[in-house]
Length: 464
Image (tube, rainbow, N blue to C red; front, side, top):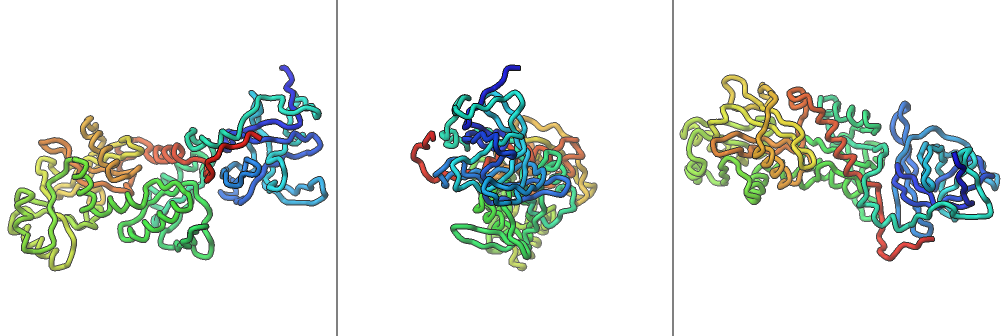
């Protein structure tokens, strides 16, 4: 193998850290390698320790920040050339110089006042490399201009710190999401949204959790119960302010939870659904019933979940009684056309990133019209049509959900959207289809989390 020559300074990159260009000082007098880092934060477990840190890769450009994460291999006491000792985190990373790349161990330290953000020590220099201390940039040059297009590049492969917002850490969906994240080398931490309180300010927004301040998360997976929708949405917004990628935004969650708003959005996008009516006064009861075609009809509370608060009125008299009772309770509800031909079944489509990744048929138990699994319904594998796939994707997009459980009915006039869930459970669909939906969720997050990047200036970057 031919030997590679390096000068005493070279352009380098760390592809898996998301650093496309950095100038390294090649120093055979130093034993260890060092990389500039600030806001250093360990995370993970004893078995899988990681560290996250920020870096200003361009000297004299503090407005450009890249946040990285990598596997931590330990901590070491390092003595600098001026005799000062410092305990540093050590990471394992892959460096690329010219057309060669190889793994090295790098210590993290603040080099803000030093000319070079990277120092390559002798233990990281391969045996087939010769260093010429009298020459520089013997390998192809890169450019700091690469940071201008960083957001447009493919996401880097790095361990992510994920936050799962839920009050049910032990249910099937939570356990599967955590397992899928760990299988891909990420850390997924449970965050109970009701224990969060927020410091809302323009410079450094924070989320506090008990006695501590929560760290930066690469992504947030909201699974917020209906009873805490408003507060849960506020927590999601706060994490969004802090720069985390939120799997579903607070606005989309709110739109899906407000059934009246959701139906109005679907209607705005010309998405077919059962005929739906809404009014405030009991004087409009007869008109409501007439709009949906008379009895039988469905009366549905706006905040209903898992089939609760959904009633089938089989006669006009029963419908008038149910509507009157709900009015008396000052409850908000919808009156909806009953799709008889659906025969107690509906289709649940799991939409992730604009694609239906899995679908199941839910069949109600005998004597029940609600097919929800929580009501004793049965989950079956089903092959959906092209029209059903298209309407499910269109509905999720209209509401603004990246991950959604879209429920539809098969009617004589084609598929009709029944409901859209922003926190769909995955137990039934995974068991019915044998599809790893949790893995699809984590893969979508990986594709959409970018290196945390800040660049407020627009003038051309200098090449040196």
